[in-house]
Length: 118
Image 1 (cartoon, one colour):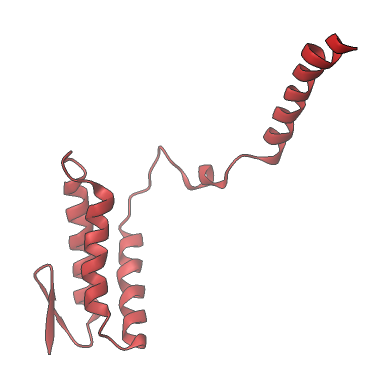
Image 2 (image 1 turned 180 degrees about the vertical axis):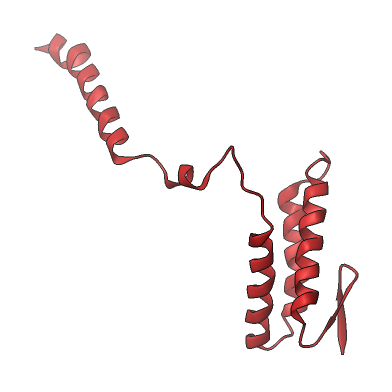
């Protein structure tokens, strides 16, 4: 029994090379869609994931887990590193910066408001 996603025929159970080819195709489509302003990338990616979900919905849990492990692994493998948004920048604001900002605010309040009242 075979099923089709985006023109790719899948055996049941799906083979790893078929899943990898689909992930590479989805990545290529996404790269091309980036340059089209009329395409909303969030909706585009959701549509791709929906088609994958519709396929995997009918698979047994172990095959579904295997499919997603291979598909997501391939997408992560071929992902580009974003120099403008490095992973270490996603950690948030340091605790030191928060305390420094609070101290500055406290000094401003003291000299502008509290000292004028007293």
